[in-house]
Image 1 (cartoon, one colour):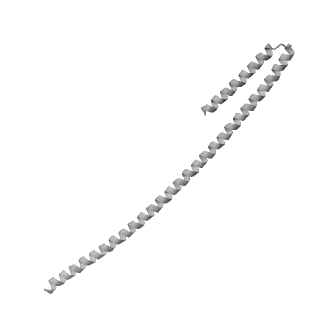
Image 2: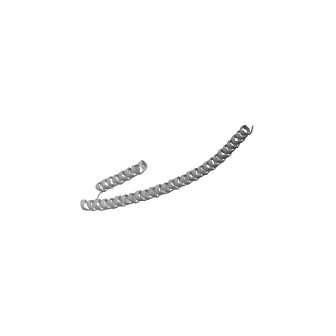
Image 3: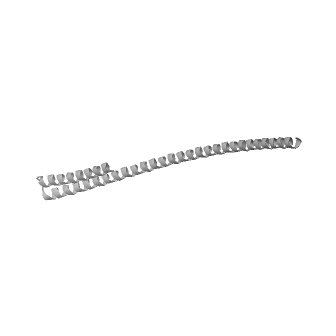
Length: 134
């Protein structure tokens, strides 16, 4: 940004310096007062037109830079959004896998618990049968 500002200051200084130099050259030239005033007026109008053209060109460059910045920001936003959506999808997939593994582990634990309980019951029945049968 500061580079653009210094460029504008340089351009303004250049235009002003040129105008002052041209005015002094016309004033010091051996001509009649009317010719000198006409030349000063013509040169002033010419420099004014050049300054306006320069200002318009600077405005156009600023607008182009603004549009490029907007496009870059939009692109960065879209990339960030896509990355976030991918991360969410991966997290969801990971969570679903963890839930599935947990369900399997729980089912296995329940099954082992049932088997252990059945074994304990059978051993208990056998012990009772031995005690009653003796």
